[in-house]
Length: 241
Image 1 (cartoon, one colour):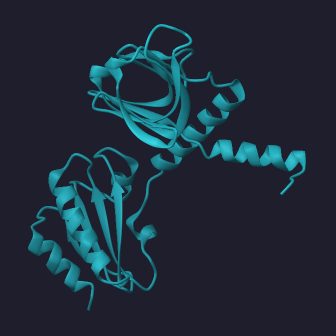
Image 2 (tube, rainbow, N blue to C red):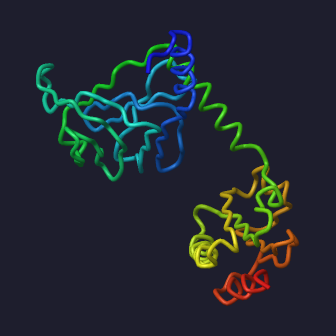
Image 3 (cartoon, one colour):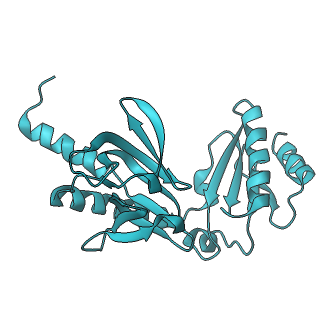
């Protein structure tokens, strides 16, 4: 299909805007921006507001997730001619996950010399930064439990805390019960932190919480302190009536 040039440019621009940020997670922080390559055991990563990439010791990096895989040159020595073309997917536990000629591989970072990523042009940089900020603004908007409900269905709203074992465990149970209901009950998980706008909007004084709504949209049960398996199961049964 041949598109007129103005339509092609518009489509290219819109596709670019769908890109969001790469994320790098250290032992103390989560950073958004884009992956800019490696040098020895150092990851080069540029934040959106920085003028150049920062250097991060890979030993202090828990993981790095790329919004989209990026094609790069992998050098196993200092020679500029000795490189392989790979597609970098992510970094975790000291290893880069890459695709090479369609084959998935794990590359130990301290066993290679460097990775070079093509320099991002200014237009792409600005578009990605704008898209990342828009995505962050959308995430920061407060969400009310009521707005998530699926009409005509019973609903379970789970206010989830990422580092909470009980939130993960009982959330898995609630989700499984909903999946086993064959579409009669819908599971919604919102990841929150104690001080975010969603917690304030829903007046959450403790986390995690599970709210159970019947088919009419009536809030039947809130579990905000006790999350034993029988509590989840019993609350779930109460909205199936």
